[in-house]
Amino acid sequence: MQRIFFPASTVIYAQPIRHLSCIRGVVTLPVPCAKTTKHRSSMANANSILLIFFSLFLLVALTALAANAASDILSKGRNITDGDKLVSARGSFTLGFFSLGVPSKRYLGIWFSVSEDAVCWVANRDRPLADTSGSALVITDAGSLLLLDGSGQVVWSSNTTSAAAGPASAQLLESGNLVVLSDPNSSAVVLWQSFDHPSNTLLPGMKIGKNLWTGAEWRLTSWRSASDPSSGKYWYTTDARGVPENVLRDGDDVERYRTGPWNGLWFSGIPEMATYSDMFAYELTVSPGEVTYGYVARAGAPFSRLLLTDDGLVQRLVWDAATRAWKNFFQAPRGVCDAFGRCGAFGVCDAGAASTSFCGCARGFSPASPAGWRMRDYSVGCRRNVALDCAGAGAGNGTMATAAADGFLRLRGVKLPDADNVSVDAGVTLEECGARCVANCSCVAYAPMDIRGGGGGGARSGCIMWTDGLVDLRLVDGGQDLYLKGYTAPEFAMQGNLTLKCDVYSFGVVIMNIISGPRKRNMLPLLPYAWDCWSQHKIEDLLDSAMEEPEFGLLPALEKCVQIGLLCVQQLPDDR
Image (tube, rainbow, N blue to C red; front, side, top):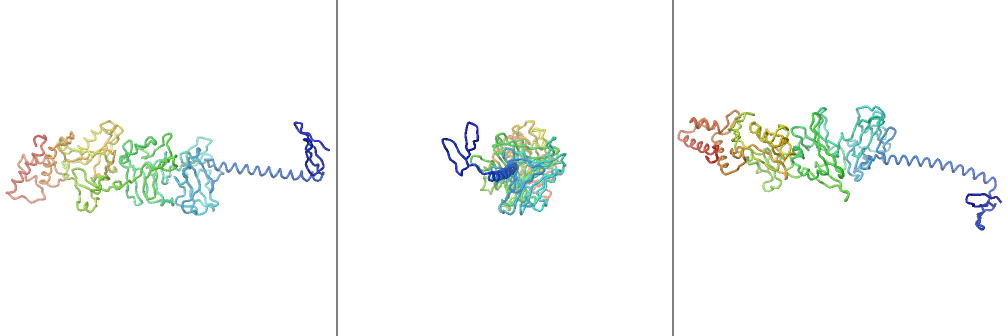
């Protein structure tokens, strides 16, 4: 019997028998013959080698799988194939292949990890992959991202123009931005980023607008449908003309909706932006190089996105972790009054005035086509009841008489009109702005450019002046004030005092306009000219030139009308 010693005084006996037995705590084992021992030893060695190879293979496979599942880096030598993903450092965003509606159409895109249907960027939106077997996303030495189909053909490319100094890599950032970086061993430079090529979603840190140096434009473009991410018919960007504002246009470049000009805090037509400013900080950039709009998420803010839907709606969506759903904080167009230019020039849209079909005219204006308005055609808008006295003074050459006659009607709580063709000066006060508008016969309205100081006469209020018809004017709860030039009594123009004497003054102006007829720009201001004609007994010179010379017996009656009109427009209210 052979005795084998083990640690801890354990004794094991090996016996030439085919069974195990236990005698008083001693375990006995059969002793194989020499031939059997040699055979089993060979088998054990073979099994050990196979086990080692299998373990190594499993280790490599698991390591690669773990790298593909968790890594946010795509470097040279690694491919992203269907089923592989890039995941941002803290897991907020995922890049990979997906389908929408039609399983045979595969796309490469980025989505929110908490909501896989919230796709925020698509690489090959206009060229889906029919078969992803063999397809892969790779990066070249030059730093270009290439999406290859199964035959090796390039389906999409980042077209990176700046060559990398060393081996480039791509990284999916926690912001949802896919960036291509130069050699990370040196000071890495961003060679390309998906944020410069938006799809239908604006994320925090992105921007829309225009590069003034290159003419390039950053814009959101809608999907064709909810299941087709190819380019749709709507696009949304920041208009760089005049005062910056965001605009929604369709494929025919027809303006569908505008936010209203930026006023330093929000867009004048979206005052509710203030209600979620604790979550987001808005960034409007105006520089020699660009005019852009974007926003950043404040610390602790939930996920958010600005989405342009396939049916032309702009939505601000915020993720509610408690219900695991997107909440709609804002949507535009919001109704009939958000349709661009619905009520025409000088028309005012009121969403709460269904009894008047929502459209009305500002005070001192009437429908330009009453018949058209009766048929709900508001396209021609409104016209002044009485021409401005400044009409004959020439642009920029206002007089004291003009200043006394042409006052301003304060329209409260409006989305400021279309600001494409306005003059802007950020360095003047609101009072100076009003004085400039009075002195400029082309000016029809003015408003503060920046309301961060309350929109009053502070040095930072700035000035916006309109010199054309006011288009897309609507009432908005919490909107801005607009000062519309109107033919008003001096006390109302200077002090805002509205009394019955103001109505007497307006009556006198109406009489004088009826007698004199339409005024042309090369004619003298009406009231000073009327006083001159009266004092020189030349009433005939005041009459409408398009009318025939009045009969002799009618002239005294016209003189009496002129006298009444002039008595009504005297400077002091008590003299009228």
